[in-house]
Image (cartoon, rainbow, N blue to C red; front, side, top):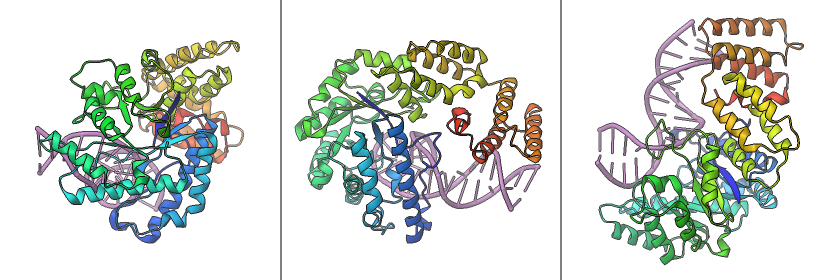
Length: 419
DNA sequence: TGACGTCAAGATCCG
DNA sequence: CGGATCTTGACGTCA
């Protein structure tokens, strides 16, 4: 089982995707942006390799306006070398990547212009995969599209337009159930007839269920038959409901207990699970650590080094509890560990806790900080205590110091990520 | 015509 | 002027 995350990596410097407004999209600007984004992608891939993340979705915004005529850069030639280099890293590490054009790429549209745009967009996505030199198991996932008051005709148009696609797209294309129009049984019907692999999305299914009432594992098994050996291991999308938002909204983090219960229900574990969740790589590593066969305590200790100050800010009790939990080096208490982290994140920070943690972190720079830096920090902290400055501002200052004085231990801390 | 979803760019406000 | 916060953009469907 491989578990991964989508598009962006949180808490890792130099992994941001840049873009611009279409009116500012000059050749020079676009070239700069592409160069920047490819560097970010390479950093994300490096991060994934270092952290044993073997499944990853590449953002569609890698090449700004990648399928818009405004972008006339022959990027696959200009950046051929770096693309090949990144692709080699991916393939060599055994990582599987994918891409997912958004809800606005509609292959079955009535308007021919929109269909042409959709095909151009799929061309663009396939070109990325091709220029990375990746095999057809690295998929491009789309939804069926609109209904236009006549699902039968709409499906027919999907099939017809699918046949117009180039082989380099077809060999990678995968279809997925959505949260509004096409249920998993709709998509399975299409996938079986047209020989297209089907991705099951559990949350879309919850929001837009099939008439046939069956548990998730039934549909996952049903989708399995659409995955041929040339397609690689079957993939699904997994997410949890954000309780504070409307149905279908992704949760901030993956609740580990709920995730493991889901995994328990699965009939087979030869499955790739793409998480769709706000905290991205954080949840991916959590789920990987709780399902891995390599139960090494040092993995949890490494996680703890990143989570500890964010936990301490919310709950000193949970902080002590986790420290105690990780004391025994013969155990691998991954589930208890993440349950405690989640439980602390459910609590609010207090001004007292935040000041305590900020002072603790200041301790890393105490000996090298300039008097002026110390004065500014103390002033900020005083303002924060009186409600005149935000904790964000305090953290920003501490981040600046962390970078300046190269405190590597703090550079990875989620203290700066989870605010 | 606006909501939907997503994220960063761009615009504007504030001290 | 720099930093913080609000608004816009880019895409297509549907109510």
